Picture 1 (cartoon, rainbow, N blue to C red):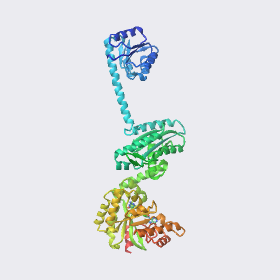
Picture 2 (cartoon, protein in one colour):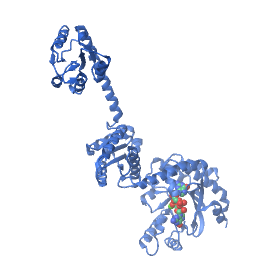
Picture 3 (cartoon, rainbow, N blue to C red):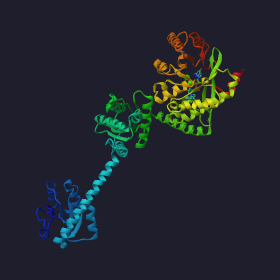
Picture 4 (tube, rainbow, N blue to C red):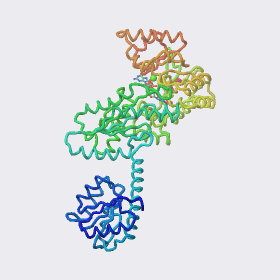
Length: 568
Ligand code: C2E
Ligand code: CA
Ligand code: CA
């Protein structure tokens, strides 16, 4: 109690003031009593000086006690000050009113004795301290709830709240838009997997630091979790402004990140939705921005994409297919078709092509295979294809020559999981086949992204005698170094090339001729895919390509038609 040095006494009644001062004087803390007789002067005093206690008369001229407390309470100088009300009358209602307004105690003037006042001051100060502690811990919890602990950025919770307010404000200004952007880092998982989570965290911090330099004060910037960041910005007048904001953000990826001696090349993709154009609620806008981000990541070289209505349809279609696929895998709605591969007009092999016989959806492999890959269903589907293909082959093996082969398409995802080669070897053995009778068709993406596992699996397949065909050659990168550095036995030239070769297109012809020559020197066989006309067949032969596949010969056929063709 000795430390109390400053008391502000606010009372318009001189006699009452004197009584209080007397009571205070008989305690140990008479030093530093400031007296005023009205609320305005009290406020002025508080601005200039910090008080430990304010003793406040309930009936001041011009303002009720409660009003005065409310005005005093907003003053930042009062942060650690206890307020005690003094009054000539008391009723429970008045006391409660004062306490609710922020008073820490209520004393009747007639009760003001030294001991009483001392106790009240002590208790009020303690109450004030507890109040402050509670407030501080509330602030801390609030900060935790609104801030991302790693980067210190606002978190998902805060972003949603702030976006709601932004949308409400914007709804009042006609013609203006709010842009919501989601950004994530391409291949962030790869950084985590290869260098560890600590490195991943450091990259996130480095990205945040760069972002903070390009984000402006009026733009909301948050980390939603993982490698996903969000922005929102209001008062936008033109759609092209949205694009330039996103482009500004993407500049942070122009230079690699140097972290712990590693140079990390990192790209971000941004998806954008605009209110009121695309939606009006935070949920809608975030969902649409997410769809657009997906586009930006997978289909756009610009790395940013603004949501359009048809994307929602494409997204829903994909979603629908994914759901149906899960069901189809349970009830086995799939079948295999076989398209003959010709060598000098005779059938030398066949490619297995999956078909989905579904009551409700007509869906081509070109559409559902990518969905299965994304949804992580391709492993299961792929295993079914290999097992069914080889089992079926074992059934018609007697009808074909020993060097007849079956070609099975394999998705990059299947090869990136260890154990694929072992599985294939097991299925070949189970069906009593020769590994040379199986060809697996891979696309160039497999060779491009080839990680340790993929390389090892491919090599293992090659080692057991399974041949590898590079599918769709000429439709993508068509890199010769990929070709020559990997165990590729067969190259299938894509139908888009074959459809262009005719006598009017000498450029294509000579490139193909050169390719066929070079590959034959490397002992790599060539198959022309998508041969549809006699002319195309003729030109391929002229160029030295004698293995063909295409509608000109046969379409993909169901098993019964295919086997009856074999026995003809
Ligand atoms: P792909 O591996 O390039 O298969 C050849 C595709 O071309 C087949 O389409 C076939 O029907 C079609 N085709 C064959 N000859 C001609 C022709 O002369 N002209 C034209 N315009 N097209 C021709 P399909 O069966 O629709 O399969 C499309 C793609 O789906 C396949 O392309 C392959 O990438 C994928 N796919 C099919 N079955 C499987 C499978 O079991 N597993 C995996 N991972 N992918 C598969
Ligand atoms: Ca193929
Ligand atoms: Ca192909």
